[in-house]
Structure formats: structure tokens, C-alpha cells
Image (cartoon, rainbow, N blue to C red; front, side, top):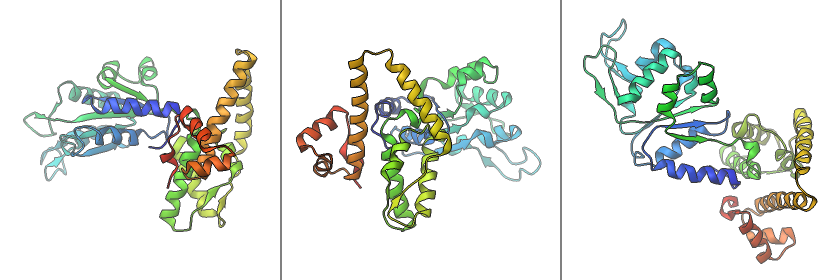
Length: 322
């Protein structure tokens, strides 16, 4: 996970605390914000790290197969069941079961999951005895489950069972300064994967990157960088902004101006300066690949003064090095 924005760092701090709490976790966030990556970070940072991490997309499980997928079956449980089959819960023994898009579960499937969470016991289809399971459950949703409960689309008692620990992942548009970090990381990954040499982003591209709303979040950014890297023959990748981003940028300016009205002149001025400084030091450190001396030279500042700016905004130079 890569980022240096305040909301991202706060998320990392919460993840560190959640790792140590062996209870169910609910992750909410827009599509492409990295919910499975966070779930893996929680698992591999916990005491269960040596055991399996089993992910499953709930939207891909037919309603009539939920119990079979989760709990498995015994030979002869139904027509075609010619041998025993362990379910996902058995496969995740002592580890973590990650249920993505948990909001896609039908009412019947929600009851099945709730029954298991109540005492962590289950009965394979066709089995006679109940089995105990030592499994941590992490679920994710790209919708607000509280709102789903209000619409009678999700069981409130199940939400109570799942939301012991809760983390809402910030969308990319709220992670000020992180887009350039992620974009350059994806460029370096493309250079390794496709062996077409290192490339860099055009400054104009980085500018609109910071102003775009990124409805697909990190996944949208990664796919865009991969495509343009492969299409670009030269060393500099220039990407035209989508037409929609022009209107979004205008709306963003209007919103910012409306917000400034609530401030006095000096407060508004300082706010803009701080935003510029944070964005500028991030960009110049990216160009210098984490070399503070080189970055200070590019910025036309003394190294000590540039270092104070990094400290002021909590920028970690190690995140910018190759």
C-alpha cells in the first residue's frame, strides 16, 4: 500500500490496531479502493499470518450453493456428490475468510452466515455432526451497509456481528498527493513486467491527475497507466484528460471558492499555500526519486529548508525511491 496523504496515514494507523484484534472486520469503500489489499494486510500482520487467507466474491456464489461453498458436503449429500468436499471455512482453518461484496448475499444466505458467526460451528451438507471452526471473518462492501439495513436489503443482526471492527477506505480523490506516487509506482511495475524501458509521466498529465475525481479509484489509475505505458513509444507518457474531468474540475473550483467564503483572506491564502507546498514537494521528490539533495536543487532551495518542508507535511522520502 502506497501513499503519504493524511487520510491514508490515518488508515494505516487503524489497520495496525485492527491487526491485533482477532474479531470480525467490516471494510467499506468505493470500487477500486483496495479492500482486498487491506484485508490481506490485516491477515498477514496478525497472529494468523502463517495460516490460509481465503478470498471469495459473494456476488459470484449462486444462492442455492452458498452453504455448499462455505461448509462443503459429504459424499451422497445430493445427486452428483460422489466424494467428500471441504468448504471454504475448512480451507481457511486457523486463518482468515474474506467475503467480498457481502451485500450481494441473498436474505437466505445472510441467515446462513449469521448462524455460523453466532458460535462458529457448522454442519457440512449431508453431515451428521457439527464442526467447530477457528476462522477470522473479514467482509467488504462497496455500499453503505447501514443504508442497506434501512432499505431492508441487509439484516441488522448480521451487520452487528460483522461490524465489531470497522474501516472505511478513503477514495483516491480524497488522498491529496497520493496519485502521483501511485502512478509512478505503476509505471515502474510496467517497466519490469513488459520490459519496454522506464518511462515518466508528463507534468501536464500529473496536473490533471490531481484534479480528476477517479470514480474507479486505484484500479482505474492502474489500468490507465498500464494501457498508456504500452501505447507510448517514447520515454514520456502524456495522457489527455477525459472530457468529463473538465466539468469536474470546474465544479471543484466552484466548491473550493465556496469554501473560501467561510474563511478570512489570510486563512484562505494560507490554506492554498499549504496545498501547493504539499503537492509541489511530493511532485519534485517524485522526479528526484527520493533523493532529497537532488529534489532541493530542482526546487531551488537549500537542502535543509527543503527537509523542513518534508517534515512539515510528513512526507517520507523512502516512498519515492526505486
